[in-house]
Length: 434
Figure (cartoon, rainbow, N blue to C red):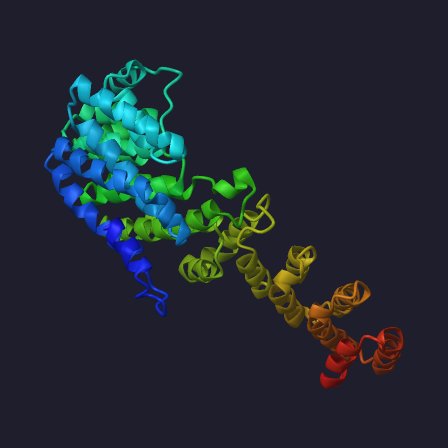
């Protein structure tokens, strides 16, 4: 298939065609390999892999000449090679032959096919691996995550559950470890080790596994525990990173799961508590209003508890929601404190606060908007002049709120005098009718 694709390119038939079917077509060989692997026939899978890999390396220069490195395809081949080698019980001569071929191909491109080299080298007999599989805790076992994943898949398929449990726990695959225990009806062991669940995604996955087994009390216990697990960005400081986004998504899932489970168990008190705990971990304006509606006469005490949970939070955590809550409660100074250090990327939040507090904190609006406008103008950020004009609109509105038209006129005249040679700015300024 690789050879046919290269020949197709060289024929010139694709001269006016931006799409090259080779990149997609090469993956059509994968199902035939998977078929043998699913039957635990590693030998026939290896036979196909040898041919495909050999063609790739022989025609690799041609592929690069046409801008096709097929890296994704190679990574998939590597995983298939590793799985086939771990399934097949190869005789020593065949192992030696493959070692020679792998070494030769590694000289061409050393960074490719690292999993298959490890799988061939270690197999299942590796001494340190055997220690892990038998429940020992060696200090020097370190395999790539993808290879560990392949081993776990094969152990599960072969129903080697004790080894599966030992490997998954040792390598930190807590979600897989606990799901296996639940499958094996060893749920008490999960609850006894609940402190091993360190992330919200793991908590959700394990709670769902309990729910699927109709062990609703256990599922609720894990879900409530997950709501209280700290957000990873509070530990790493990477609030806008992948973990932060993932944790916020799973916090919402855990909250919904806990609520549904409490309803199924007729535990309304727990459902309400889950909302409270979910809010404390990740405040939401929508949740805040829901809790208020459900609190009844106890709302004032509940409100104090909810607002107190904001203390010590990362400045950026649930920033928009906390601002909305403070504005709703007319706690204007708290809202202002949250946006004081915001940059122009968060201008929508800043302006939301300015709109809300203009009548009550007019001088702050005047000073903050003027400072932000002048900062842009003084450093001559021409691409941001329209933002400067937006801030000046707030300056004008603040002067009007103070009933100080003369103050605005004086400030306006000074701006024109200082920045009249910034033609782009002056055009936007005049267009805004300031």
